[in-house]
Amino acid sequence: MSVSTPDPSPPPSSPQAEAGPATAPPPPVPGAAPAPVPPSQAIGVLHSPEGLATALTALLSVGAAVDLISSGVNLYIWRLMKDFISDPAGVEDDSGDLADVLNTAVAVAQVALRLATIVVFLVWFHRVRCNGQVFRPDGFTQSAGWAIGGWFVPIANLFFPYRTARETWGASTQLAPDGSYRHTSSAPVTAWWTVFVASLVLDRVFSKRYTAAETPEEIRDVSVLGAVTDVTTIVAAVLAVVFVRKLTALQRVKAAQGPLAAV
Image (cartoon, rainbow, N blue to C red; front, side):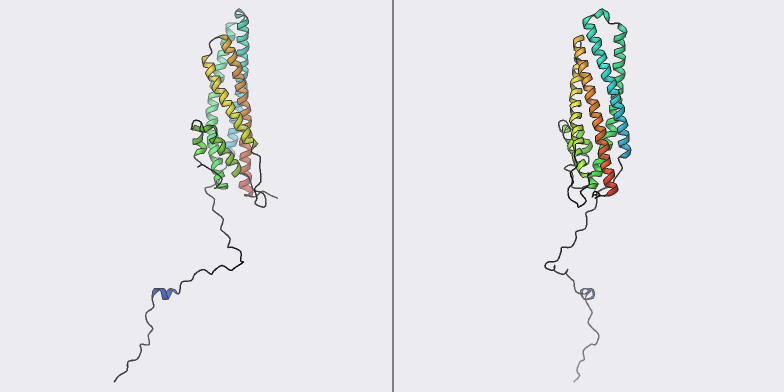
């Protein structure tokens, strides 16, 4: 009787055997520090707002100069109407014609500068908002598109842009050297927005009253309101320059030095 001998060749191994047994991560050691969490990646790329800020500064400055001329024209019309009410024969026709020419020229210059300033400001505002998203992705309550769209929503445009400006200001501010929160006054944002809204309200009231003015007395009174509106707009333009320059500087420093302020 023959006895079978075992086959000396090993049995075919399975893919799992070839790969070796699955290894599980070692259990945490009691009392050991947790593994560091990798930093989150920034969203987007920084784009310099410097050129737009310079253009805005120039446009706002020229606009303020034109508004100053406009306030002078309004005061000239006020004086002209005052004299006309006192003595109609004492006012020459040339004076009235000059007032009309000056008023029309200034109005055209104001509209042109307003449109140019609005376009450049919106581009700058959206850019610094997107930069803020890079600096601090969790620092905003709305998407970057609202940096532009928020200006065109009735009623909401009285506070949406301000909220975006405040959040961008906070996101652009460096932390303390130890990583803790570092307070930076947002007074430039609040001051600019308050006077800016006041100038919009005054301009709306002035436009309605100017359109409805017919008598010399009404023209005299609305001219005073026009001068006040121009002065308020000048103050708003100056505060806008401060806001634009300071926010641009905050982003320049944070982009160059990093999220932590120097000791």
